[in-house]
Amino acid sequence: MKDIVLMLGVSILLTVCPIGTGSVSAKGMEAFEGVCSRADEYGCYVNHRYAYALAWPKRLLRPMGESDAGDGQVFASPDGRAELRCWGSFNDAPQQTIPEALAQALTVPDRQVTYRHAGKGFFVLSGYTGGRIFYRRTVSAQGVLATFELTYETSLKPLFDPVIRDISTGFIIDPAFGLR
Image 1 (cartoon, helix red, strand yellow):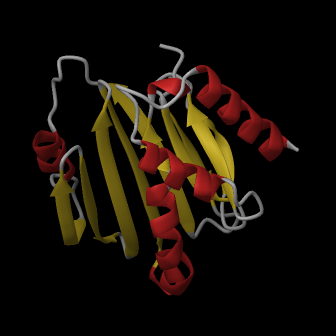
Image 2 (cartoon, helix red, strand yellow; image 1 turned 60 degrees about the vertical axis):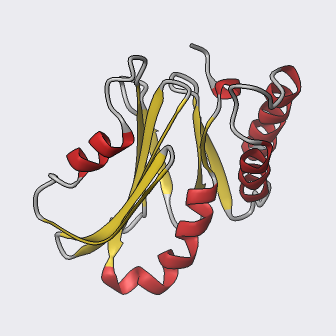
């Protein structure tokens, strides 16, 4: 029922605040909605403070509650073998560019980065940390810098690798989601 209410809320927001100048592309929103419409597989977390949304695999992870600061959420597997974190911050100046955010992310200790890619308005890092696999994606748009990071035990690679594409597709910034 919660999923239906959330999708209805997203639909209402999109009706009141249609895709247009200053919003995520229509293709990006369509991809996001495509993931979130699979309500049996994915839940969709919307952060209203920073106007971003994230699809999360609800068969694998459980929401642990939004942070007190209202900047994000943690989703964890019941057995503690996997965790998805997301957070955002305002970047009005913009104080931090994608190359600067990438450089900062590369300084996180005890990480072996095996893949990195940066494009216009985003970067991706993946590799190993503390015996686990990590996948991190940061996007910048509309004066917001938003990040998600998924970490999971290496034995769960066959389970989580296919999910990463959907999580990435279901991770967007759009003013329609914000209450700024």
